[in-house]
Image (cartoon, rainbow, N blue to C red; front, side, top):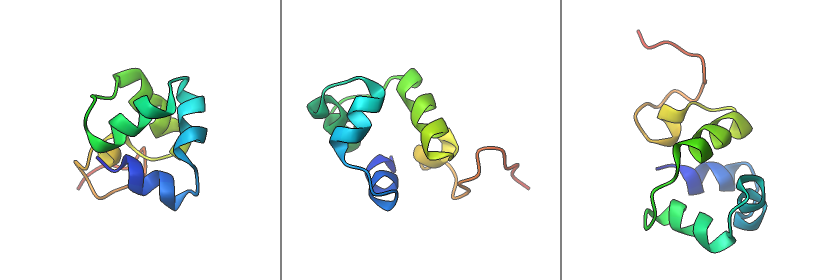
Length: 71
């Protein structure tokens, strides 16, 4: 997943993102490392917050745009 890369590009700390998701910083850290699976609700919230597609976060596409269509 691209959670860490996107977070760092947008200049947020793990603490700031964990507050948005209402989870402990340690829990969010585990999402980034893959030690814990991120809940779909959190994934959708981050997609909206960062204005990128869920597919982009999950590395299923290189297209960041949430509403882009593949050709």
